[in-house]
Structure formats: C-alpha cells, structure tokens
Image 1 (cartoon, rainbow, N blue to C red):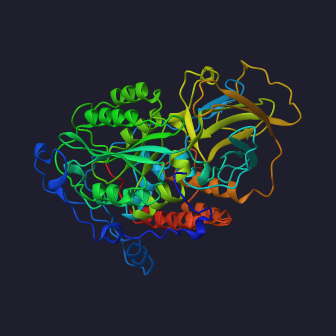
Image 2 (cartoon, rainbow, N blue to C red):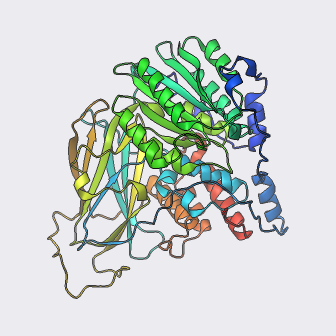
Image 3 (cartoon, rainbow, N blue to C red):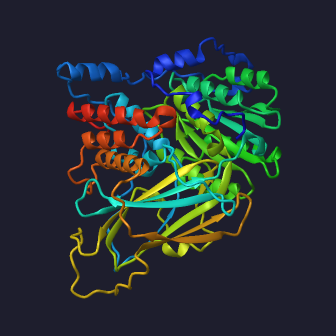
Length: 550
C-alpha cells in the first residue's frame, strides 16, 4: 500500500520468533534517546521506577525440559490487571426457530498474537482473551480472486466436522482485491504514541519505536506523517512531514522517552485535530494509536471513548490500534475502539509481528477497499436442523441490521482474506437441541439442493449507500476438504480448547496439530508451520498444570 512492499512474502521474511528481550535488543540497538528535546517535557510528571516485568519462559527451554522427562512445576502467574471483554459463546440455534445469521466481518488479528505471547511464557490465556475469529483471520487463505464487479469475492466449502460426528463444517471465505503499490492512494498518518510511565518497559515503548522505524522506511514522498505524544500532557512531537524526509521522522521517533500518567481523552482529540488539519481528500487518513491501553486520566469508560470516536469517524479519519506489553494491558479498550474507529486492532509482541502487520500486510492494514461489510446466511430448514456460528461473538448483528445502512460494520483492506465458520447438524441427525412436539416453523422445500443462501452488503470506501449481492450455498459435502478448510478447522478447534468450549467434544491439541499439518498448503511466510509449533507447545503447557492468569 503505502509502500513498495514485495509481492512474494517468502522473499521478504520468514518469522522465527525469538525471546522478546533479545528481539528488542537487536531491533533498537544503537538508538539514542534525547529527552531534553521532547516538547513539554518539563510539564510531565517525573518518570516512575520501571515496573518489574513478568519473567518470560523460553519456549525452547520449556520444550527441552518436557521432552527429556523433567517434571515442569505448575507455573502460577502473578495477579494480572489485564482487561478483556467477557463474551458468552454463541449458542446452537434451531433452524426451524431461527434460520438467519447476520454478522459484521472481523479482520482483526490481535487476539492471536496476544494468546501466543502468553503460551510462550508458559501460561494458558484467560478464556476471554481468545476470540476465535481473530485466530482464524491471522492467516492468509487462497480463496477465489475478486472480479471487477465487486472489491471482494466469496467462496464456500462444506465438509464433515472434525470434532462432532454427523455434523458438518461450513467455511465462508472472503478475499479482497489486491491493489498494487503504484495505485495506492496517498496516506496522511498520525502516530499517536503513549509515552506514559506504564510504557517504560522493553516490550512497550522500545518496541513501539522499532515498529515505527519499520513503517517509516516504507513511506513514499506523497505520504505524510505527524506524531502526537501523550503522558501527563499531550504535544505535537512531529508536525505533518513528507514521507521523503525520513531522517526527520526517525529523529522524532528516537527522541521518545516514557514518564507520567496517561491523558487519553486529550490525546485522542489532538490526534483527530492533527489528522483533519492535514486531511487528504480521497486518500488514507488514519490515526495509529500505540499504547498498552492504560487510559488512567481523562475518559476511562470505554463506552464514552467509543462515542467520541464514532462521532469523529464520519469526518473521514479512521483509527487503528496497536497493543503492547503485559500486566496492565487493556485489550478490551484496544479492540473495541478500533472497531468503532473503522480500523484494525493488532497486538505487537515482537519485531517479527511488526514486520507482518506494518510490512507484509501494510495494504490490508491501512488501505480499505470496502466498508460496512455484512454477511447474512439463511439456512434451509429442509436440510439444516441446527447451526452455530464459531466465534464473532461481538460482531453478531440483528437480522434487521443487515439492510440498515446506518448500522456500522467492518472494513476490509486490500488483499485481506477473512473466514467465517459454521457448524451444522443436518436434518435427520441427532443435534444438541431437544425435538419439539409443536413446531413453530414449517420446513421449506429444498431448492436445487441448497444448504443455505448467502447475502452480502458493503459500501465503497467513500460511499454511503450499500451494494448487495447474493449466492446460494450448495449442500454438496466434499470428501476431500481443501487445505484451507483443514487449517481453518484446526485453528477453530484449537480456539475452542483454549476457551474450554462446551462444543469441543473429544477434540485435543494433538488433533489440532495433526489437522493443521495437513492444511499447511503453500504457507507463504511460514505462519501455518509456526501455528503447528504453537499448538504442540500449548499441549505441553496444558499438561504441565499451568494456571491461567487471574
């Protein structure tokens, strides 16, 4: 997007995740800080003493100790103040009573990186930290190329459920159009950086700086960057600067230092003012909020923050959030404000993750090709007895929201692939719901063996009126599932285990690893192979008696 990024991910980067302290040391070596040049430094509170970091467990050491038979003592984490939204798992629906599923697509990936961070520290994540759709959508898929008629294409596939006998798994795949770097619109970016005392940790501000350096190297002359810093007070650390003046941008990044409390409300207001004063008509106008989410001054209620962002987004400025750190991490805030701000939520646990989000996937992170994207699936009660949507708990919409263009939904970036999974109990099979003596809805005849009918609505990036298109979903069950369906099923099964889902059946981490291995496919970037390693490590962590954080 913004920049000249290579098309072949294999030629760019193969992630091999190192221990965080070593990664950061390599990424930021040679960086000098100049606190005296920070604007309004004198008005900030004194920097507090750094909070002790939770000691990270080495994945290699952990695996080695387990493999040679040494007993691994239960790892009891310290009390955590991390904040996650509590969401109840989607329930099974009777098609005779409720045949329609409506949802906003989710393109966030932050939950996967955050879960991975905890597993690599030898801890199972809290169930609320696991959002299965964000695990699924962390990975690229090889779906159909979009036609010129719409900015994304939709494909479906139906196969046997791997964890429940007699059930089926429906995969709905969405693939957005690729946009070449030459055709990417110019960008007006505002780096909104938390430099409060809570960011004074190797996995926070130094990693923010390393991430911003990576992004700066990809800026084009037509792109512009501003930087707002905030602690006790807020300041414009870097006024709007051309992407061609990389030395000036990098110098501003190098000057950052942490200290003070977090004035979140004032920071957001100033960032929107800066973005709007330099707005590029028809361009990408986006705020990049980089923080641990610890807004302890000003607005602290998430609903109030969301209301403020909602009022501002219609003026053409979007907001993406990038989470850092642990212990006091406010993930609830980070994910929710990105959704309202028409942006993405990512969690950055390493410089490798920065390279993925702000390098390889820069176009999908920033360049929206369709907004307010909604899906609606109507199941045929003649063929489908029961169904449930796996994940997307905070993206479920009311049926009447589908045609209401005033209802906000997700944005899809260039080249992004998105997956939604449904587990289905066919008519004639035993489901989880008891048969009803008096049916409230009569089954309709099957139309050409249709399992369901799928409708989609979206708006152009600068449009206000939705376009709708639809397609039938065949009831034909494939006997040879694609690698994408196998891999997506493995990820969903893994997420259900992490959440202790009541629908996981007799599934196991070993089965997820085996199925994911079968679904590796081309594996550009090596992300699927890394997932297989993560699942195996999770199995060892679970067997060690690891206690979930409080």
